[in-house]
Image (cartoon, rainbow, N blue to C red; front, side):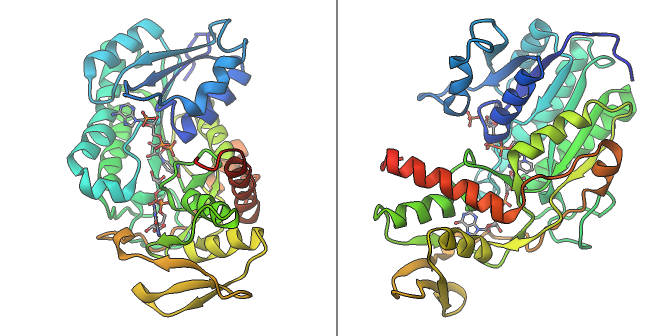
Length: 356
Ligand code: NDP
Ligand code: GDR
């Protein structure tokens, strides 16, 4: 679908998050004007995009602008879209923590499900449904209790959390608006992707931060929940490029983005401690399982049932062949390199700022 509009103006919801920050960098590098929606908070929540202010290209030349808003407030979404007149919208804003969604179930639905609807309707209210290109941050969590391995765009969904159920609504409302109103709207079914900017209470970052702190004598032990769940972990930098590529095609469609490798949480722990020269020896079972330093016997890891989820997603492994075939996307970073990148960054961070 040709837009006939040569401007390159992107609006990113969730710009302060892990993906939002990498996507903003990526789009600024491509010459876009980037607008982001940020929430009002009692403390600064812009740490991940702070460096973009320091860059005269993005800040002083007005290439990046932030707008206060919230996915629960339709009127602000209409006002922002009307003022910005974006050519591309990336909907990354979400209550994105699966475990937290069991406690904040209604709020998660408000933001992740109805919030997506509000944004789509705001586009229509502004009369941009035939020109704007829309990216929806869908997720491998939709597969939940998986029906087949590996998972493709054709694998049936079976969501296993309030988060996944809310994202399921988001997925289908995007398809419905594409079919009903001819919108160029895509779902990126992204498998887990991590980075040194990953939120601190997601498992990978929790592990690399703790391993770095333990190495520097700043923490005693790492407490985790389910060690046996398996995830297809890629690097966020690779994945934001896939988001952009999806919006540059002639026809809007939905795509799986994944590395095609799966590893358990246990393997992530082992690889992280290996980076600092330690080998983990596991003892006990279930809630009594612990991990010790094989050489010294020091207790390093302990299972704490408080991190278990009421329903778990056991095994995710994605097949991104369609994205490779349609627009040549492939991951450049796989498991070992990802762990190294995160461990290196967290060791540096903790050395500089032991209270981080
Ligand atoms: P983060 O949790 O790092 O970022 C979420 C962003 O959403 C933050 O900018 C946050 O703002 C913002 N946000 C939360 N609630 C609201 C709200 N009510 N109104 C406006 N903004 C809000 O997530 P990621 O960057 O990791 O993920 C980006 C998106 O991709 C999310 O939708 C996530 O569900 C989805 N996803 C992520 C995957 C991953 O592995 N990372 C995989 C598949 C999908 P604040 O900074 O103020 O909290
Ligand atoms: P996930 O990521 O639920 O896959 O959602 P998370 O890192 O939270 O959990 C991955 C797996 O690790 C297990 N686990 C723990 N998880 C956390 N957070 N903390 C722990 O202490 C812990 N111990 C074990 C979990 O049970 C789970 O099996 C992420 C989010 O980014 C979503 O927004 C996104 O949609 C999906 O990835 C794809």
